Length: 291
Image (cartoon, rainbow, N blue to C red; front, side, top):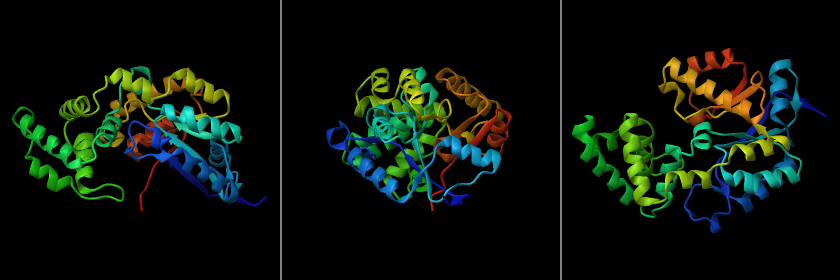
């Protein structure tokens, strides 16, 4: 078997039967297409496990040619319902990266609230106008700039989203101070989704027993942080808190705290993050670099 030092990593988020979903507009992959992708990858690539990738880093071992590794962010219930049975049936490993707070405190991550707010309305301009209205409403109380200022700064289309959608995501994920962006997001979630956060969380994410079940059956469980923050926006103490809380959770799932991996939320990190990961025995971490 030929050996290599390269690996293709395929990252997934929502994988579900979209036609039977309450939120058909969620930006996810239909399970039928996921099954097709697995078939294609089996034909053209050689699947590896996270343990094999760690060994390649630790011991400078080579990997099979055309290696591929599958990763799944956020530990959605869909992963347990659809992804895990298929991978288990075909004796393949997936690497799953749960957010601790969503599972232990039954909250819905702000990033997911925004996804489902957007998926609840066909005409995104309706949400856009609501966001602008709330910026004007809270402008004086929170010392905000004008809605036009934020729109001109943030509304630039991406590979996947229109300028309006990019604006909504950026203003509610990172641009505004945390307390006001959470306030606005919660108000929009209540208006457009209309389901209690606790109930929605239990429907959306796996629980710890499901994660333990997957681990017993050969799946890999890694860290995706505690609160899904952009890590580079946090000071050292807050980053350390994020990392320590996620390690504690991994121990509860049955993972080795001296040999673990991380998938950066939003792919975001800085030198402080790397320094702390080395301190706490992280073997490797994954990011994204769109190009």
